[in-house]
Image 1: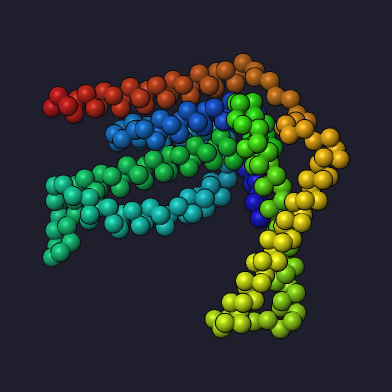
Image 2 (image 1 turned 120 degrees about the vertical axis):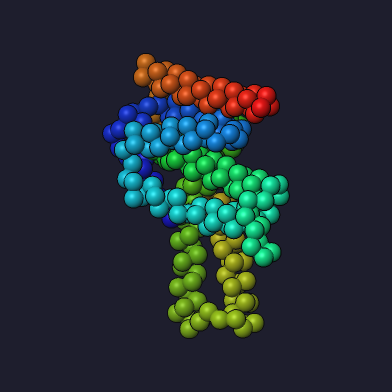
Length: 257
């Protein structure tokens, strides 16, 4: 189940308009993605951590989100430093620690952590409805916004259908295994799940047409930018400009020396 653990709160971040937070997240994530020098990436990570503390998130819960990407980062550190090429820093038998691979692994780690904390602080602090409203106000195609909302709304129903099918199979003394019979049973369960999902989609579509659905996103809430929203965007823009200028300055120095 998709849970919105951080969407409720009374922090300064929660009090900002959803469009403001979405714009800030897009701006910072683009800057982080295009940065390659360590000092700008460290500055971005510090800004991201500051946003997490400003949002007053549960640090333990936020740390658990970091564990989701820990396996990916571990795989990077097990492969890139030994296959990146370039200057050899350390060698033992056939193992060679390369400077280029080590730098690349560190860059990816800093980028991943910074972007994760940015989205935790700015995007996960709003509900899916608020996020859809923000994307709609930023002129994202309406069909994509509606697809996001409908997917979020009905993924729970599909999960309920799957659980009911699994319970029905269990009542009939079905036991998971590696036999051909088990594979056929799983295939039948998957097929029935798609059939039920298609039937539910048709009923939902007819119900929406009966309620005069016109294909456009309508929100029951109205959000207006206030002075604090403009101040926050100004601070984010200043921080992003600082990171970009630091990146350009370091690139210039590296070419000179």
